[in-house]
Amino acid sequence: MSDLYAHRESDEYLLKPEHFAEKKNRPKRWDCLRPIIYTSLAFVGFIEILFFGIFFAQVTRKTPERLLGELNGLVGDFPARRVIFRSDPLAASDHKTEESRNATMNNWLSYMPRGNGFIAVNQTERYTLPPPIKQLGQDTYSIAVFHQLHCLYAIMSVYDDLAAAKSAADLNAHHSRDDTHSNEHPHEQVHVHSHDHVDHCFQYLRQSLLCCGDTALEGQDPRTDNPGTDGTGAVHICKDFEGILAWADSRRLVDAKHN
View 1 (tube, rainbow, N blue to C red):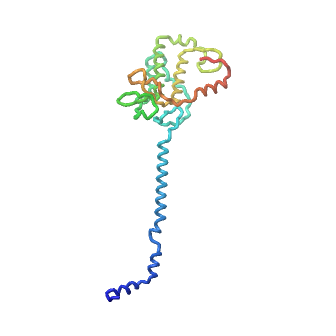
View 2: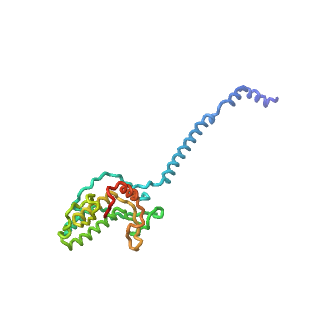
View 3: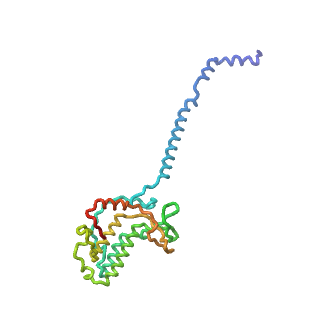
């Protein structure tokens, strides 16, 4: 071997061959980190799958039908409360004076919200709803309970107009029994239309409507192009009336019935 390359042989043997074998067999850093990296990636993937699964379930989950609630979940869910029905002397007027009628009107207005219970709904085609009421450049709906209160007050107002032309003595002439819904004389048809009885009905029906708080959304009256609703076409979440009727009939005290 020439002197030019003689130093290479000696340099190569400065490190023994065993050193190269040890270096080859020594575990690389990647081999140590690989399990940690794979475990981390698997954990991140699991979290992503879990997150998207929860998100998908929330998006596709159907809103449960709430008793006397709104079918599409467009109206808030309200808690149930225990309420005792109590007498309200301002629920009906004295059918004589304008002062009394105004006091009764203000009393009823206290049960109405500003805007009279009309709300706007966007993208109505996405929901099970009747045609909307077009007003103020928006698609709007009436919350049923406020429409019901409005109608009941209108009946009472008309009654006040009629009663003003009659004497209280005439209307009270047949008021000889307690004006309550009872079963004391189940075979007898009773038609007593005294002020006291009608006042009781106005008050009782109002309390019943407030108790139910029907929030179904009502759309455009199909009989007219003028903005307004007659309540038809809306889907209400109701109790099974036929089931209630059958249950009561099977537990009847007598066979006769009357209005």
